[in-house]
Every structure is written in structure tokens, then in C-alpha cells.
Length: 65
Image (cartoon, rainbow, N blue to C red; front, side, top):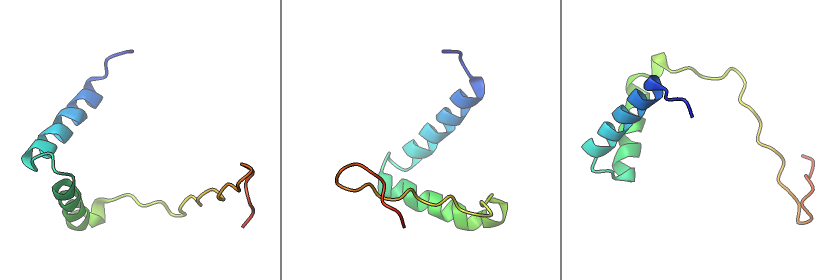
């Protein structure tokens, strides 16, 4: 697989943020929720959310909604 420096940089920053929060999932979620609020005006939101697929029935076929 080809090395992608941008992806490696993003992963390094994510790891650093995780380490700053003791790799604790609850603390990380709280941190990202705070960032969402702080930078809400910068977030890209989809104009129309993609609908969830219909749940599968017991036989594996999709049920209509």
C-alpha cells in the first residue's frame, strides 16, 4: 500500500489527542463534543441525511417501511 503522509499526520494528531486524555474513551468523546460546540459554525452538515437501510427480516430479506 502506498504511504500517505497526510493520513499519517492525521493519525499522529489523533494519537496525541488520545494520549492527552489518557486514552479514555469517555474523556475523548467529551473532548470531541466540546470541539463540536466550539466550532459548530465550521462544521459541514449534510443538507439531507442519508436514510438508514430498512431492517432485515429473520429470513434476511429487507422489509419495507
